[in-house]
Amino acid sequence: MEKRILVAVDGSIYSNNTVHYLGTLFDRLEEVRLHLLSLVPCGALPPEKEWMDELELLNTLPPEARKRLRSTKTYIKNATDKLHRLGINPERITTEIKLVRRSVADDIIDEARKGLFDALVIGRRGITKLEELIIGSASEAIFQKCHDVPIWIIDGRVDSRKFLVPIDGSICSMMAADHLAHIIEGCQHCQITLFHSSAMLSSARSIEPSDFYAKWGREWCEEHMSRPDSLFHAPKQLLVESGIPAENIKWLHSSKGIEASRQIIRQALIDDFGTIVIGRRSEDVKKGIFRGVSDRVVLMGDRVAIWIVG
Image 1 (cartoon, rainbow, N blue to C red):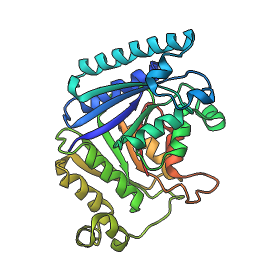
Image 2 (image 1 turned 180 degrees about the vertical axis):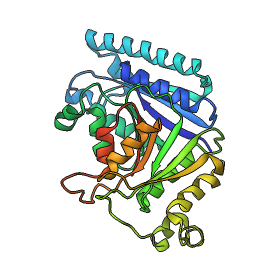
Image 3 (image 1 turned 90 degrees about the vertical axis):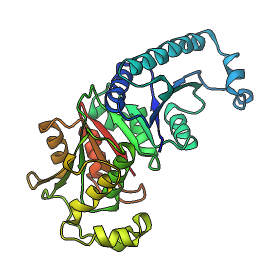
Image 4 (image 1 turned 30 degrees about the vertical axis):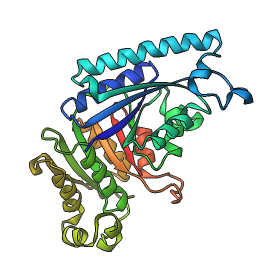
């Protein structure tokens, strides 16, 4: 089954890190297709131009916007060439350049939804985590607004192919494991660690198979989610059924520290995990003063890719 990934690029070093990550991770996964999207700001559109098609708008651009468009074409080509050098065949890459209609964040989200992509990839901007928390950024806006498309946020240069998947027995963490299983289906070389933290501020959870019937069916849930070791076994089973060798999947439990998100980030740093795959609760769930675990992981992540699955 083909996996279609929307990759937002803008010619910055952060986009270059994103391209490097994708080329390194997916060079041997032939079913993964990458669609590079770049948005060119053209200023506020007057009402009479809002309904023009892309070609008509291009013909009315002022000189400065035309200059940005030429630069965009150059770095789209450079990104494509870099992916080729990293082992991604040309037929697996498509590109698109569009003018900003509303905002960068809103337009990217619209493209991800309309194109029915399996994931949306963005590079984190080069501002401090505190600045990002206070004033926001395109990546932060996308993270907050888009809950229906998995979002991959790439921070810095990532070379490791190891995956860390936090597991807590919730539908969110199972969805994260399911997303990973879909994307890397049949991968024989990826190393995956299912990680559970019983840190002091983490909430205990009992697994009720019936809570998962709607997604995986009664028979599967009763077989794989009624065991004493279901916390580990169920997500592992999803990965094994997608063709991941069982010996490539490990289990790690930690009771250190007082807060799960810090333990996740700490474990990723200690064991050189390149990617954290984490679920998050729906946007209508109250997260409290300390926000959700996935929010804090994104906030603290450094030189790591974080896949957030709603």
